[in-house]
Every structure is written in structure tokens, then in C-alpha cells.
Length: 358
Image (cartoon, rainbow, N blue to C red):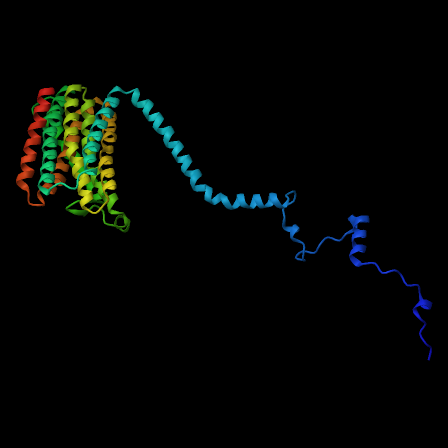
């Protein structure tokens, strides 16, 4: 058997070089001949990186993409606020070009300010007695009743004669029809809009969405339905081009808004809301009055033939609120005499204001 040759005799022994060193040398000599790394192999994370982006840039891009959904809401809110600001600016420019509408806005704003002033003392006082609350509500009802009679209905009949309604029945008939329309409109809104009275409870449409509303919003809706006719009356009064009488009407409504704001804040406080929230809602409850004043003045001033209808409509809306809301609320706690005495006092005060100033 042939014996194997020793290593020295078979072939020369090459010097051993470390494999990493050989690989590095090959990479430096022929970098273009390297095979691309296999997908999914270890150390191939760079294959998922976008072309032209380094590691830091890719991280920033991913972070920006993830933050886009969170930025959508603030961006949308900013766009809405910017659009609202532009709309308010255009509305202010238009109101300045309409003297009657501007006067109505001032009158409605004074009434809203009176409501806020009435609610402010509740921050420092504990509560009002039930007798005093009912008396104040009756006082407001009396002022509104006299305003309906002397500042809306009688001027409406005169306006009907001025626009050409002749005869014995036509002027009063037109104002009476408008009065019924105003009451029907408030009755429809009262049944459609969910709201809640402080004593009577919840009214309006009964649906899942209405039941899901917080009681705070239901009270706000009820107050808005109550104050909207007052704003309409102020606006229509100024549209009648009777500045002195319109000022008397706005003054009377502002006077009765002072105790009204106080009653609203005290009632919310008694319903379990915090003192600051009750006063805040009471102060804000009059903000619907300048809106109604601008709306009433704008509609009637563009069509003079609508003046008697507008006056009658505002009177009907106020009468509905008086009969359906204020008087029943002031009688539910058994203080009818105090409420009736307040009503008569408010009626006399408004009658004197209208006849003396108008």
C-alpha cells in the first residue's frame, strides 16, 4: 500500500489569512462586484428605507405622517374660526350701512346687558325666596303685556292704516292675523325644540337625541325661546321709524330683563348647578335678544308693507311666552297673589314709560 506523502512534499502550504480581512480587501478592490443582499436577510434593514432618505430623514418623515391625523382637528377648527371671523366682519360692515338695523342692535344689546347685570349679584348672594322669585316673574310678565298692547299692537294698527289698509276691520284684522301667526310660530318651535323648565320639567320633541342632551342645554333652549320674541319686538319697533317709542320699548324690556336674569341664575343654582355656571348661563341668556332685534329690523325694514305684520307677529310671540311660560311658572309654587301683584306693577310701569316717552 502506497504511503501518503508528507505535506511539504505534496504541495506548498499557503500562509493563512483571516477571512474577514480577505473579504474587506475584496470589497475595497471590487466594490461593484458585490452581490446585493438578499431580502429578509440579516443586516438588510436599509432595503426598506426610501430612496434618497437617510435614517434620520426617514424617521422624521414617518413621524410627520403619524402626526397628520392629530393635526386634522386643530386645522379644521382654525379654518372654521377664520371663516366665522370673516363672516362677522362682513356682517358688521353691513350693519353699519343700515341705520335702522344698527339702532336695533344697540337696543337689543342693552337688553342683553341688563340681563347680565341682573344675574351678576347671584355670585355674592345665597338665594332668593320663592315669593320674591314669583313676584319678579310676574313683574316681567306685566312689562311684556303692556309692551304688547302699547308698543306693538296699537302701533301695528296705525301702521296698517298708513300702508293703505282702509275700513274699520282691515287694520285690526291684519294685526290680529299676524298676532295669531306669531303665537303659532312660537308654539311650533316650543314643540319642536327640546327644552326644560325649572319647575314644569322637560318639554318638546321626545327622541333619543333629545333625551341624551344635558339638562344645561335644555334650560338654555328654554331661555332662548323665551327671549327671542323680546328681541324681535325691539327690532320691529325700530323698523317702524318711531325712535322715541322704540327706545321706550327697549327700555321697558331692559328693565324687566334685570330681574329675569337674576331669576334664571337662581333657578339654575337651585337645580344643582355650580354658582359660576349658573351666573354664566344667566348672563348669556340675553344674547339671543340682539340677534332677534337684528333679524326683526332687517326683515321689516326691507318691506314697509310688512311693518304691521311684523309688529303683530312680535306681539303674538310675546303673548304666547307670557301665557304659556311666565305666568304658569310664577303660579306653580302657590304664590299667585305675589305674582299677580308683580304683574300689575310691571304693567303700570311699562304703560307709563310708553305713554310718557312715546
